[in-house]
Length: 127
Image 1 (cartoon, rainbow, N blue to C red):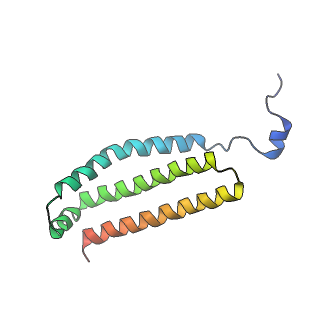
Image 2 (cartoon, rainbow, N blue to C red):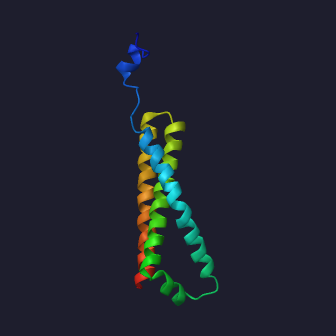
Image 3 (cartoon, rainbow, N blue to C red):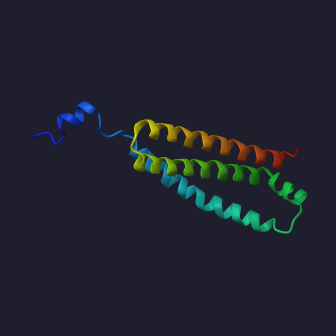
């Protein structure tokens, strides 16, 4: 039986990167994890309406609440990063530009995550 690939494709190395399945599952798993975490975060925000800063700090300072909010932030940002990465890979065609934007996407996600977790920890532990 003959091979279905051209020799040019083999020489250029344009075959599968072998990471599409992992990316697919990471997006799906993070989506499923975000459903209860988002409902929790929305419920928490609604429960804090009309309360003062000290009451909000007391609620966010509870260990379970703080951990769930940090998980919400971390998983949301990773889900965002993966979605933007998929869009960049699909629609940016120049390799240098693609790699540069992918690096910026990762850096932005890391900074946003670090600042968000820092803010939650500062709120939870006071300061």
